[in-house]
Image (cartoon, rainbow, N blue to C red; front, side, top):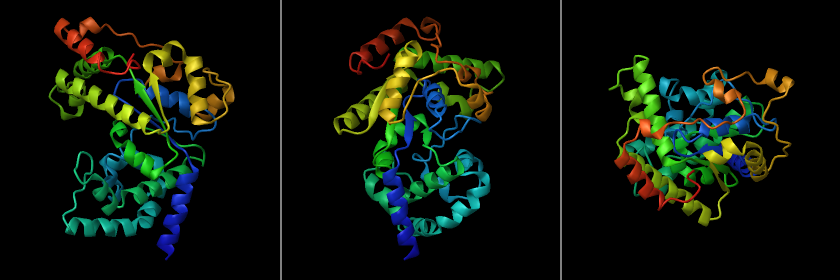
Length: 315
């Protein structure tokens, strides 16, 4: 009875809140957008890093003890609160043991029985509990979370938070690919083995990129048609017309804004600078990249052909 009451209260809390989720292709400006949104005083402060939790893509990691794979999730909840969080989700842990016994898959993405797996694993209540603990840990302000790959989990995001606001970053596909390859070359130059599994996401075949872009475009179109709270934010608009773009974003989110891209002194003291990426401490500016240095003519033509299909916000 106590668990049922708690879950109902948790559901009411989720229905009353509208967290912001920043998603989209990797290297499309998601970190920059996350920083600009989280700098607003209405939002929780998470200045130590724009960590990606992957909590919707891999919710089962929340069921595990502390481990490297759920480190980012623990940062949101707070290391000191992890044990209390684990205690609260014990009924869900038990439900997952029963699901294991029945042979229910752990992963739900791209599965034919996706909704059934989601429900059997109780991932919805699990993630509501996760974000409730995170909300308490981060100061009980508006929540914002950035994981580009969550673009593939939009139905589940809206399942957990019906009023969620989703910001989708887009960028010229050629620039995204070039940015990946530039970053890959830099990692190798710094001594990382070019065959290392950790950097292969930066070194995908062109066909994989093109398939990803088309999939993401289809997902966005579908949810716009469904009338979801979703706003597409082109990288060019964010970096070249930052004031107007951020004003529109805050209006969409529903927070008051007199946009000031230069943080006030007191705010700067409260929110330490991002040390791992100095560009995030500055007003949005376009990170220009020489596409011809990373894509050959045939690749450029194939990307151009794909853009005929994509929405014109990919810029």
